[in-house]
Amino acid sequence: MSFRDLTRRRFVKTAALASAGVGFAPYAAGAASPFREKHSDGHIPFTLGVATYSLRRFDRTETISMVQALHVEHVSVKSFHMPYEDSPEDLASGVREFTRAGIELVSGGNNTIDKDDDDHVRMFFEYARAVGIPMLVIAPTAKNMPRIERFVKEYDISVAIHNHGPEDPHFPGPRDGLEVIRDMDPRVGLCIDVGHTARTGVDVVESIAEAGDRLLDVHMKDLRDMSDRASQCIVGEGAMPVADIFRQLVEMNYQGYVNLEYEIDARDPLPGMKQSFAYMRGVLAGMAA
Image (cartoon, rainbow, N blue to C red; front, side, top):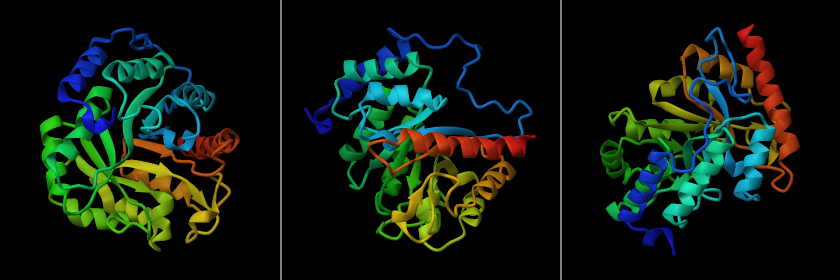
């Protein structure tokens, strides 16, 4: 059965299961998690996480183990690991798997919401409600953004437009999104992908500053050549100004997530992801000292 065939009733049932905590074994309230990024002085307001698109060649169980190996407890989950077409029971089971492992689903995506049609848009918001994610990372069009804003208000679920660089006919860079959403509900914002942003020829740090309160999510990657998509590399080995990006996020008091989206080494991503986190954590440790 396709996601299109899932009914509202089935999604609501899943949401009820999740909210009731059926079968969940989360960390006790207030308990210390071994995975949490700790910046006790509050100097670093944001949190590192993983976009599970990075682990797209692995099933959910393998992905959870790999996220744990990274000592990360927040993920932006891709539909590979929480499929749209899953039954309500399967979705609830997936949430339980992540929760038992001490991993929180903080957003979902990327989701291509490209039709200006209520039924099409509603499917994604019902999915988000069922899985219990507070935000959808989306690839929309300028035309259907007013419709999406209406669903944001109805469901109280945020959306963040993910820019995809020069190849994207709708939102190549963050500024393209800002022009469309400037006067929309504050829960409508941007997911700035730093790699794709750099490839549009703009200053990434300036783009983040321009986004201001509209910045709801960040996808982190690195490039050896800031104009070449194929030059992606381990974070810290390229030209991406990671420290400057982090300093700008601190200056803005950005309290969201910086999710590593590691698109290379698809069959064996864990070594490069570990090195990327080691570099980012080193930068943050230096900033928090």
